[in-house]
Amino acid sequence: MANVRPIWAHLSLILCNIVWACDYPFYNLVLGRYISPMAMVSASLVIAALWSLTPLLWEKSEKIDPADRLKIFGAAMLMGVARKLCMMFGLANTSPIDGSIISTSTPLIVLFLSAIVGVERLSKTKTIGLLLGMVGAIAIIVSSNHSSHESSSVEGNLLILTSACVSAAYMVWFKKLVGKYRITTLLRWIYCASAIVMLPIGAHDIWTTDFAAMDTKIILASLFVLIVPTYIPNLLLNYSLRVVAPTVTSIYAYIQPVVAIALAVAMGLDRPHLDTLLFAVIIFVGVGFVVKGGKTQNAT
Picture 1 (tube, one colour):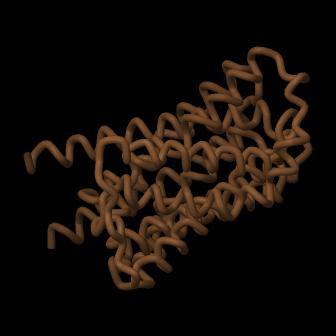
Picture 2 (cartoon, helix red, strand yellow):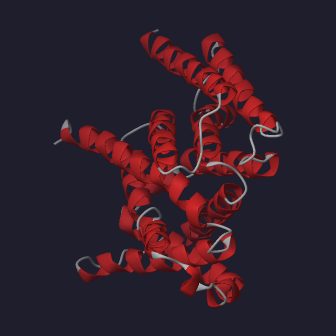
Picture 3 (cartoon, helix red, strand yellow):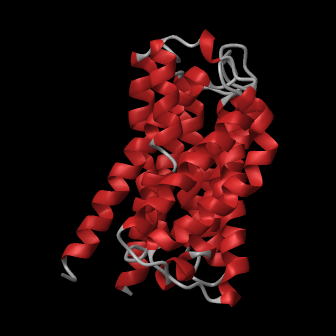
């Protein structure tokens, strides 16, 4: 069984990153045009909270240590509220290609935060990778000011980068908490707390959404991003965090731009720019150095 669990963890990471990759073009299709970012965040968190209650049909409720309740609430505000808000407002103001590529800076931010809290050491190779990755991400953000990047914006790209920072913080600071309780228990607390916080704020935006203006394609895209990407992929992510290191977990984010770019181009929502792809290569090379540095460090 010990040999099976890591395999399932890695398969879970592949699947949740493919689902998240679909977010970028689908969110870009509906956000701002048909559904406001605030309405999307609030509604998706309510649906995720309902999803999180379903395991109670076949499992007993697990008691949470009172000392951990504030930590879980902090996790809810990070992963449930802050990440979702930054992601939704970011994608409403930038292109799906830029958004998916900038999100791949998550492994580099995980490394940086892990070094700060003493989980990992910054070797020379890792430092080079970290600097390369940050240069690539910053270059994409700055280049969005160019006239040829009409569907991108600096503000949107900065919000996507902030979302990546929040994801990295969750992976590093809450890894021990993830291993202490059942995944279903942890997500139930996170999403119910997030929904309680966000619903009063976003209720007006949900109520005033013009559903009559949506055609079948928009309705299907909206249903997908409301129902699928929040609870299920995070269930898989938290499962993987039990057996896989945060840095390794975050590496799988590099599946996302490949799938997202293919979908965005196929749907006619965006077109790849040569400079953006070049900066993406710089980020990928940076992560390559980080992975290489990790293997060298483990070997010594």
